Image (cartoon, rainbow, N blue to C red; front, side, top):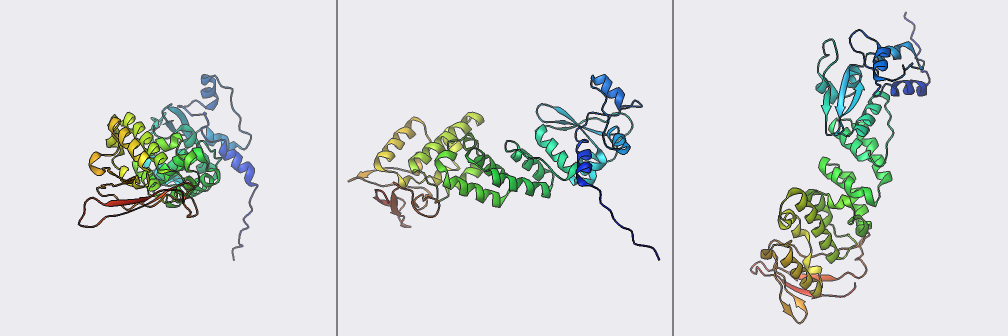
Length: 340
């Protein structure tokens, strides 16, 4: 009868350290010349692994070279390890190359720092994340199908979420359909509306990422300020896309709640809209009757006051009520102004 073997585990830290030393190691075997020759040619002192002979052999046989990011940084790795750890790399790298130095695999869209973090995870099953690059690592994890790394990144993002990071995180969440992260980001922006909407990340949101924000009833922000923020967002998009501001803003203007504006704010908005069109003229008109405004909204929805997180209206906000009879294309607005 065969005796059952005993599985004995060595210390994890030295093994992890040894594997981590493989990530982007610059020893690269070329022809019959060993790693010392490669290092000497590069002007680098020969590297001697502090672990074991098998590690030295593995290092000298790195067999895949990437050119990563816009900086075109060279990154060295091991085909067998990447292929067995990640289906994306298994499909990308294909069968083993012939003798000699293989052609580099160009990955121009992923930053080098994020790619190295992915390799660190694949080699060691652990990763060191940083606030400034975690969204890029998260993006790579999603694109490469690394679910465990994705969850690690999501947990880290939630922990470090702040005013400067939240809009960038919202964009990633919307782009890749990360529902829980999107909800966390919107809740954070609702609680820090004024600060978050002044960040560069807000100006760089796509229309699909901005729409959930504008549909929120809990933004603690005056509607006039929100419209100014939307105009700034549209200006940036217009400059980047070389399109008119009104065209860039078209997907989001219906979510601006014009009925929450005071008469003076409506007047100022109309004047600014003449100078720099944002809201198409066909979607709204204004008339004055004893301090009341009448809006004609084409496809506009009944106005709901923006409320602070927790459901209470923001201090100093106003509530407006308007009805839209089915037979009347010019819904009437009976505005009640003043603090709630």
